Image 1 (cartoon, rainbow, N blue to C red):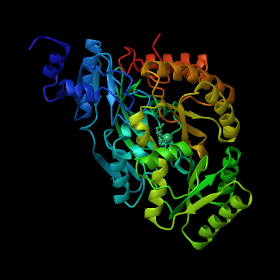
Image 2 (image 1 turned 60 degrees about the horizontal axis):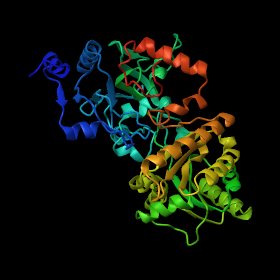
Image 3 (image 1 turned 60 degrees about the vertical axis):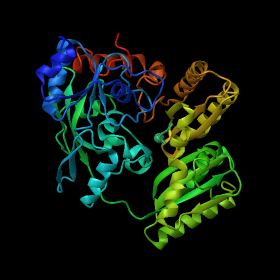
Image 4 (image 1 turned 30 degrees about the vertical axis):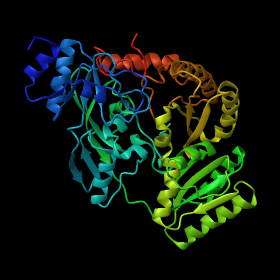
Length: 463
Ligand code: 2HG
Ligand code: ZN
């Protein structure tokens, strides 16, 4: 074997699993974005924290960048390796390590799939409440790296709320044991929170202590057909006032058409421009009766013109499918994705402003809106028309996203609510974060990753 960085890595770390076949480089070098051609140097699949530390030491010596890799379901290019980086896949570090019933903390490795974590919680009579459609393939390490949100943020918050401790190998090779599962810890800067949402740019998450909670009360789901945009928030206020909401989601007629074309069942005869999915506590008759009251109030006020309340868990699942199946139904069309947030109170005015921009700027594209409207988080997927080339389409979407970014700045919103900045949203960061903040983020990166080997080029370029 010739003497190369990779041969030195195999020699120094003889047990380390490495993959280098073209198919593996392709597979591990990309996430769910399909814009960048994967070109990693190789894939390392460490089995222990010791191996991860040794990889970082090697990377520092060889000046080779590292791209952390979980389930690669990301939508912002955060896990893309397109520049000769070593991908560090946590596929083999995917175990539940320990459970403490007093602390209600599950210690897990970063490669554990979200769904497997949720199942492990149930085995202990508890739940891990962060949830979203990619649960079967995404990993907890990736969820932490993007501070993933999902469908129950309105009740349970984002991933950040559930991380009681983190072990991280920093860009300088140190193993940091952050917060160690403490509930209270007022001892200076909380570096754990710095790592959450850092998209792997500061270090590699090698273990997480995840908080669990009591099982959710019995719930029902209602799907409401809404004739006008202004009514969306009126329905929200009514639901919020009277129900114990665990999710409040929305989608448009266009989104519905795509999931239905993918096999989901449309329960309504007439098309409406907007739909809302509300999940609410329905543990007893009093709570169920309240749902009936909300329903009536919405009908009487003309905010809703059709609706259905689930009568069984399978009906609840098919109503959820209408919302959760949207991303998959659109995937073959390779949409350009926006994932924005504003304060929930600003949603009506923001939607109106954006609709005017999209109607004007995307005359030929289909624009599909959906998302977590109760959190102020909207997903906007733009679909290329057959007459436009992929390159021209991306260029056009980037131009319109600049307008979106300016509008977000006016509304005090964010260009990434829950998917991360990655490569996709990098050029719009300055619309959401001030120059002073970005400069400080760069300085923080220099402290934790002095050689700039940790997922470089993601979130911002180093100067
Ligand atoms: C969702 O809420 C996901 O379904 C994906 O965050 C959003 O595909 C998207 O744009
Ligand atoms: Zn989402």
